[in-house]
Image 1 (cartoon, rainbow, N blue to C red):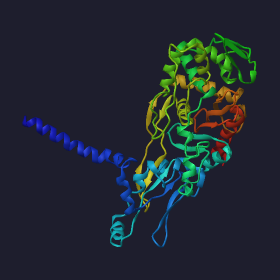
Image 2 (image 1 turned 90 degrees about the vertical axis):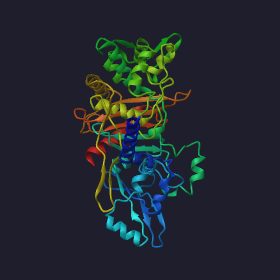
Image 3 (image 1 turned 135 degrees about the vertical axis):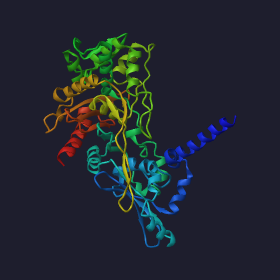
Image 4 (image 1 turned 120 degrees about the horizontal axis):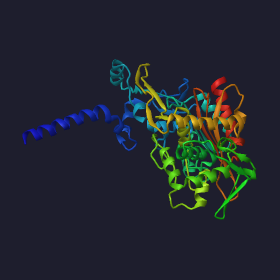
Length: 456
């Protein structure tokens, strides 16, 4: 009995040490922990910086001791950096503990305490690229939508943009109008928490499921007449286009709805569901805030629902960030790296306090499967619906999408893709609400981002 209590005591001591060294920061940094509010009595909130050295958020301290949190880029980083008034959001919430912690030289801290002055909080250096974010912001213009750009090899998020937006500098005075604006939902981060039908970008999932079911893409043949009807349910190709005789590669490049509806009925609801869930539909995502993507097919699903789902319609909903993660896995040989936005934490006197290293999250598909999907996506750029990305001084692969969202046939414009196909550098996922086809609205934004990445 004595040894039993000794073992329990040792375990408790061990857990206390583990908690203080490993878990304590997570609990302190919880948005529900009001203890953080007391840190601001002793520390001036630190800066948030972009990866290319631009100040995204800072605290100005005036002669009378008053403090003001300002955002030099105003609306451009509104959702991803967030705000520190009327609550917290974005990185202001995620990095709250680091921003209100000071690692100044201890003699300086002692001096400040004796003089009744606050210590300078640490600077959070993000992975965000101010030039690419600004490019995406200007390219999206006054349209609604979202843009995500990340490095597939590391998981670093370079762009996270959502519109409509707001100015975090005036969040307090505009708070009532912002929270009551149901028409625009300006506070919603559409990049991570938007829920959209994926449209033809989902054909990436259908293609993967077909390959897993048959072991090959060779031998598939379909005569597209612009319309397919099964059990009294009809699906048209976009604009009623008749693609004629197609194999799997041309059907994907042409984004042929008829062919993929045919493929979906051959696969069935259970098969499509398993592959979708392998790609994190209905699953938690490796992000701090996100909207879980929805996929609802099963073996009882009617043919009409299977047809619609196989082309990215039906009840399927997904965020731009989730589509970016799937694309990143394709670009990275099947491996999804853990996405992140905080690169390092640096003290006010320039010493690195913490550095984040890339880490593998999960393998979503085999190398062979990733290479095959990459080949399909290259065909979309070389000979298909994203051909405007061809011949721009870099290679690219991608998939366009037109996601219908009302009975009038209005559609959101999608594009997912990556650049430098032999050694991918940058992944993008773009949605333009009510933008029409992917080639009309989303692809030009991708071109602007890729151009800025390589040539600016």
